[in-house]
Image (cartoon, rainbow, N blue to C red; front, side, top):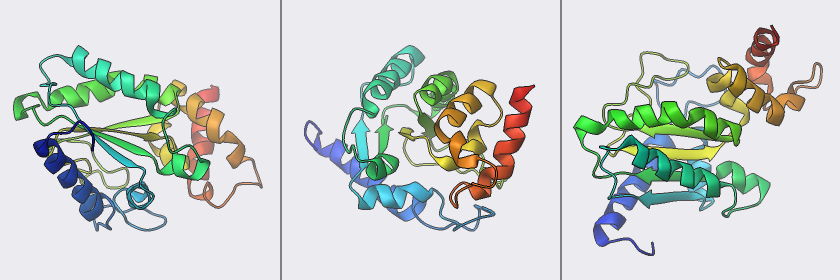
Length: 211
């Protein structure tokens, strides 16, 4: 953890433990209609493959959204060009950026930043999510579940995956970016096992955005 202060290392370790003990564990609140009920299915593999990275930005307080957006866009530029590079490990790669000096009065800047930057990230084949103690983001399958609550103010980046049609179906631009990467896996009568749980959602979105 080069360049980190002892306090930074303490924060990074607490975030890693949150990943292990919360994100990578089953939850009765998930209500996913397929597979297991792990809160975030990729985190366990990311940690085990040493592809889970934590960065600390103590200088960002949330007063300036431009400062936050600039920092996040700089990570978007470099995410796909940093190791690991193998296809399997790229899928497991996650970057968690912690902003310990964003206080409770400025948590909302994370929500606004994610909203403003999502399209840019999706176009690059990336997913951007926010987490903080007051986050109101709901579970994809259980809208009564606040799925993105964390002890620290966080933004997280990972590569787009087959299941992300759940989050990208509403916007034509988002769906187009998804379709470019995964559309071939939904060919009629040739849908692979990983894509099959999302086939109906994909075909519905395809018909919607053709109009």
